[in-house]
Each structure stands twice: as C-alpha cells, then as structure tokens.
Image 1 (cartoon, rainbow, N blue to C red):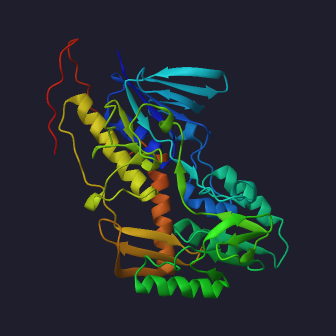
Image 2 (tube, one colour; image 1 turned 180 degrees about the vertical axis):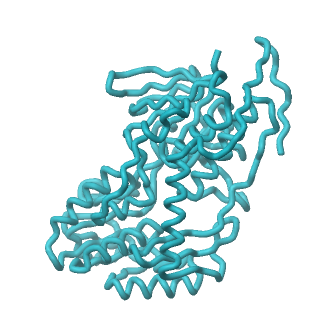
Length: 397
C-alpha cells in the first residue's frame, strides 16, 4: 500500500513541502494530497501591492502541480482528528473524510484584531487575498484628501503605508505604531525609513496604543482620536484555529509545538510548518511568523519525512535568518541584515537596489512554489517493514 501524505494548506510552506516530497519520494510508494481552499497560489507577501491597485499574475495550483504526482484537492479543512488520523474537508462535492499516515499542517494564519473593540467591524486587513481585494475596492472609492490610517508598525504596516501613499499621493496617509518607527532596525535602516516616509508625506504617530476602532476614526489610550476614512489593521497574525480543537500539543496561541525537524512533540505522524508551528530557532527563540521562516521549515519537514520513510539519516538543519526584506513602494526598499536569531546589525541595503533585491526574493519564492519538481533530486524508495516490526532507532545529522 502507498504511504498516504496529506498536506493542509498551499501557501508558501505547504506548497513547497508538497513539491519537495514529490520530488524526493518514488510515486509508486506514496500518495500525496494537497488540500487548499483557493484554486490559486496566493503571494501573501504582495497583498499590500494588490490592495494598492496593482494586478498580480495568477498562479493556478492545478497548473503548478500538473504532472508532479501531487493530487490537488480544492476544499476547506473543517476538522482534524489526529487520533484517528483523518481530516474532514468541505469542497465542491460536499463533505469528505481523508485518511493519512503522515500529516503536514500548513494552514498558516489570518489577521489578528488583538481583541480591540470595533476592529472586526470597521478595519481592513491584508492577511489574505479576500481582505486585500476589499481594501482595494474601498481605497479606489476614496476622494482626494481623505485620511487612511495604517495601525501597526511591523513589516506589513510599513509596506502597506508606503505602497498606499505611493499609489495614491492624493490621500492623507498616516501610520500609528505602538513603539518607535522601525525601532528594531539599525541606525542606518531607521534613517532611511524616516526619509522615505517624509518623502511620501506619511504622518507617523509613535507610541500610540489603539484602544478602539470606529467607522471614521481610531481612539488611543490617552483619549486622542485619529481620523480614518479607512483603517488598515496590521498588528500581527493569529494562527488557524483548527489545531487548537485537536489533541495536539499547542501553545496558548494555538501554534503546534514541534521539535527541530518540525515534527509534533505529541503526535509523531504530524508535522507543522510555517506560521502554524511553534518552532525554535537560534538562541532558542521562537521563529517569527513570516515567509522567511515558512520556507526553511517546509524544507526541514519534507527532508525529515523522506529520511524517516526511507531509513536514511534525519537531517536537523538549524533554521536561521540573514536579513529582513522590506519594500517601501515600488522604487524604494530596505534590506536590514540580521544575526542568526533575527537581531539587526549595522549593515543595511537601501534605495532602489534594495527594492530590486526584495523583488528578486519575492520572485524566487514564487518560482520555487510554481516549479515544485524542476529542481534536481533523487527519488528514494520507501523502506518496507514486516507488520509489527519495531522501527530501528533513527540516526540524525
């Protein structure tokens, strides 16, 4: 019988994991099913561009995985039973139950309203394509001079504010950050960030704690009201809630606790990658939710699955960071070089060259997803064991 591998989610981490597994395992030995709610691959790192009015190249998953041996199942995951090893999905033909031998959980995350009153009713988000398209439509309907407020001073907030301000210089764009603007960056990075914000005319409200969102304004903890015909909420992400409803060991935020090979510490037939995983990086610091974390965790999980199925040594390659890539509109960028555990160092690349660098990174990530089996790899056969024979102790590298 074929070993059944089910991958939940076809974002960067899920799609790359499925493609890497298909490239490295013999198709006679495994059946790989990739479940995703949308028919297309979504370049999440470009949602600020979509919201600002740019058209993105469509990437149908059916075309990307054609001929790979991966079965694409367009459906929404409604339940996971890790004790019975089943996944319930809802698709065009109704509800269906999928059985698995190995599960890769890559359902990712959505926006996080942080429990602030009025956010769900009045704010817009960029965590996915539907939200970005709603924001795009809303921005297109704004008259010149109307205020747009981006709440959140992280990478998503910086990219959203600059993209909107560049695309719509007639709008009054502002950003509210709980801390200082880019305070985690190097001095060179902070200077360049302020320079770009000043040139684009973006008003910055630092050390601003938003306590309520209303239809035409946000309210700060000190009682100050900031006008906002449109509020864009970018204060972090919340993981998909499915894992919390299972018997998997998860954190208080719902992320699946995994070991260095992205394997669940409570259920060894389950792997978690990307935002869904609570994985530790250098210095025993949790990896941040990002494409920069998602891609290498997908590599690690896929390689560990292949090794365990084929009886090879299990690699445990440390996931580390090299830089943070920030687009500041189409013609400006900031590449902040960092330590392995994601702390800024003095060096930073800025300006147009940084914008080109960021664009190459985005294109490279999309290419890796869109061409899952073009990279060379030797397909291995799954090791066969007699029934009831215990597995040998695994070696690691």
